[in-house]
Image 1 (cartoon, rainbow, N blue to C red):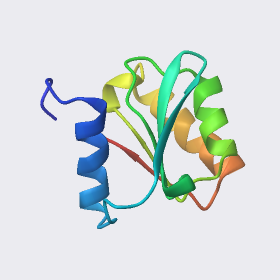
Image 2: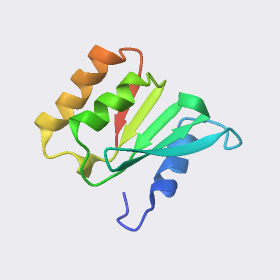
Image 3: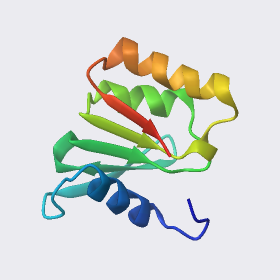
Image 4: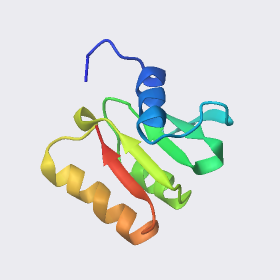
Length: 100
Protein backbone atom coordinates (compact mmCIF):
# COMPACT_ATOMS: atom_id res chain seq x y z
CA UNK A 1 0.00 0.00 0.00
CA UNK A 2 1.40 3.36 -0.99
CA UNK A 3 1.86 5.84 1.85
CA UNK A 4 0.18 8.72 0.01
CA UNK A 5 -3.22 6.99 -0.27
CA UNK A 6 -6.15 8.70 1.42
CA UNK A 7 -8.90 6.91 3.32
CA UNK A 8 -11.20 7.27 0.32
CA UNK A 9 -8.53 5.87 -2.04
CA UNK A 10 -8.30 2.80 0.19
CA UNK A 11 -12.06 2.51 0.54
CA UNK A 12 -12.73 2.67 -3.20
CA UNK A 13 -9.89 0.20 -3.82
CA UNK A 14 -11.63 -2.23 -1.46
CA UNK A 15 -14.98 -1.70 -3.17
CA UNK A 16 -13.45 -2.44 -6.56
CA UNK A 17 -11.57 -5.46 -5.23
CA UNK A 18 -14.79 -6.95 -3.84
CA UNK A 19 -16.71 -6.05 -7.01
CA UNK A 20 -19.13 -3.75 -5.23
CA UNK A 21 -20.85 -1.04 -7.31
CA UNK A 22 -19.62 2.49 -6.67
CA UNK A 23 -23.13 3.92 -6.88
CA UNK A 24 -24.44 2.85 -3.45
CA UNK A 25 -24.84 5.08 -0.38
CA UNK A 26 -21.85 6.22 1.65
CA UNK A 27 -21.58 7.88 5.04
CA UNK A 28 -18.97 8.34 7.72
CA UNK A 29 -19.04 8.83 11.47
CA UNK A 30 -16.65 9.27 14.34
CA UNK A 31 -16.23 6.64 17.04
CA UNK A 32 -13.84 7.49 19.89
CA UNK A 33 -11.97 9.93 17.65
CA UNK A 34 -11.66 7.49 14.72
CA UNK A 35 -13.38 8.09 11.41
CA UNK A 36 -15.25 5.06 10.09
CA UNK A 37 -16.55 4.75 6.55
CA UNK A 38 -19.90 3.02 6.07
CA UNK A 39 -20.76 1.82 2.59
CA UNK A 40 -24.33 0.87 1.67
CA UNK A 41 -25.61 0.74 5.25
CA UNK A 42 -23.10 -1.89 6.34
CA UNK A 43 -22.13 -3.85 3.24
CA UNK A 44 -18.67 -2.64 4.17
CA UNK A 45 -17.35 -0.66 7.11
CA UNK A 46 -13.75 0.54 7.05
CA UNK A 47 -11.46 2.35 9.43
CA UNK A 48 -8.00 3.39 8.29
CA UNK A 49 -6.84 5.45 11.27
CA UNK A 50 -3.25 5.08 12.45
CA UNK A 51 -4.25 3.72 15.86
CA UNK A 52 -7.52 1.87 16.42
CA UNK A 53 -8.56 0.91 19.93
CA UNK A 54 -10.47 -2.21 20.93
CA UNK A 55 -13.47 -0.02 21.72
CA UNK A 56 -13.60 1.17 18.09
CA UNK A 57 -13.26 -2.39 16.79
CA UNK A 58 -16.06 -3.51 19.13
CA UNK A 59 -18.32 -0.64 18.03
CA UNK A 60 -17.78 -1.59 14.38
CA UNK A 61 -18.38 -5.28 15.11
CA UNK A 62 -21.63 -4.46 16.93
CA UNK A 63 -22.90 -2.90 13.69
CA UNK A 64 -22.49 -6.39 12.14
CA UNK A 65 -21.31 -5.34 8.69
CA UNK A 66 -20.94 -7.88 5.90
CA UNK A 67 -17.30 -6.80 5.53
CA UNK A 68 -14.88 -4.86 7.73
CA UNK A 69 -11.56 -3.45 6.56
CA UNK A 70 -8.65 -2.01 8.54
CA UNK A 71 -5.13 -0.78 7.77
CA UNK A 72 -2.36 -3.15 8.90
CA UNK A 73 -0.38 -0.33 10.48
CA UNK A 74 -3.39 0.57 12.67
CA UNK A 75 -2.51 -2.24 15.06
CA UNK A 76 0.55 -2.67 17.22
CA UNK A 77 1.75 -6.15 16.23
CA UNK A 78 0.22 -9.56 15.62
CA UNK A 79 -1.51 -9.92 19.02
CA UNK A 80 -3.58 -6.79 18.31
CA UNK A 81 -4.57 -8.14 14.88
CA UNK A 82 -5.53 -11.48 16.40
CA UNK A 83 -7.63 -9.59 18.94
CA UNK A 84 -9.55 -7.93 16.09
CA UNK A 85 -10.39 -11.36 14.68
CA UNK A 86 -11.51 -12.60 18.09
CA UNK A 87 -13.73 -9.56 18.66
CA UNK A 88 -15.46 -10.16 15.33
CA UNK A 89 -15.82 -13.90 15.99
CA UNK A 90 -17.62 -13.05 19.21
CA UNK A 91 -19.75 -10.05 18.15
CA UNK A 92 -20.18 -10.48 14.38
CA UNK A 93 -19.21 -14.01 13.33
CA UNK A 94 -20.61 -13.61 9.79
CA UNK A 95 -18.47 -10.55 9.00
CA UNK A 96 -15.55 -10.97 6.62
CA UNK A 97 -12.60 -9.08 8.13
CA UNK A 98 -9.65 -7.90 6.08
CA UNK A 99 -6.50 -6.08 7.17
CA UNK A 100 -4.64 -4.29 4.36
